[in-house]
Amino acid sequence: MAAQHKRQNRREDLIKAGIADINRYGISGFSIRHVADACGVSCAAPAKHFGDKNGFIAAIIEYVNTQWHERQLQIMEENPGSTRAQLLGLSVGYVQFLVDNPHFRSILMLKDDVFDNIYHKMRGELSSLTQKLVRKYCDEVHMDEETRIRKQYVIRALIFGAALMFDNGEMAYNDHMLGVVRACIDREFDLP
Image 1 (cartoon, rainbow, N blue to C red):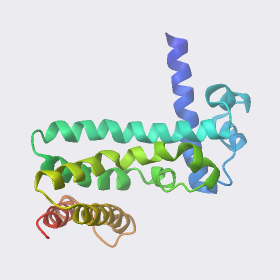
Image 2 (cartoon, rainbow, N blue to C red):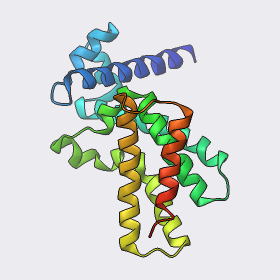
Image 3 (cartoon, one colour):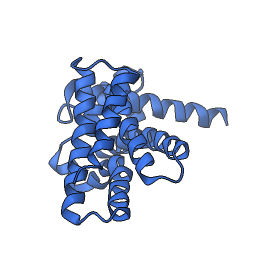
Image 4 (tube, helix red, strand yellow):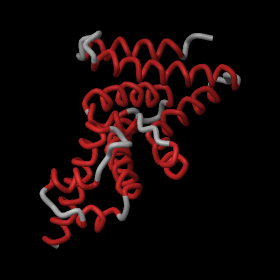
């Protein structure tokens, strides 16, 4: 049991070092050697845990997805019964997740043609629940498909825009301003 726990900790340490490496050098400069050096292990250790570079990057994306998925479950439990309340909670929660975990942003914005061909679906999982809730809510209130597409775009733009504005200091990151973001997202669903 202790060996398995140590192996899991090593795996997570490697993933965190991998995230830092992608933040620093980008996907094209990502190096398993850098990660191994940062963790004080041989280059064989990452290969043992992840296989090749693509397997390692996939594990990093899965790790980020898991972190967000756990938060999503909390938000859904906090807002039972109302699709709109769940959607608002998830939207604001996603802004908080992006701001509180800036080191994940490079993973979320990862762009690599070869990698995307293989792992595109994994990255899309981060926003899939929000997108499903937008569709569900629009269906519940009988919005047409064109309106749903527009709502989905605006909600995502509000989420990513708010995270960027909080991050670069254009807006104070506090409960009041998160309330403003929430009100803007909520208002969008009252507009035609």
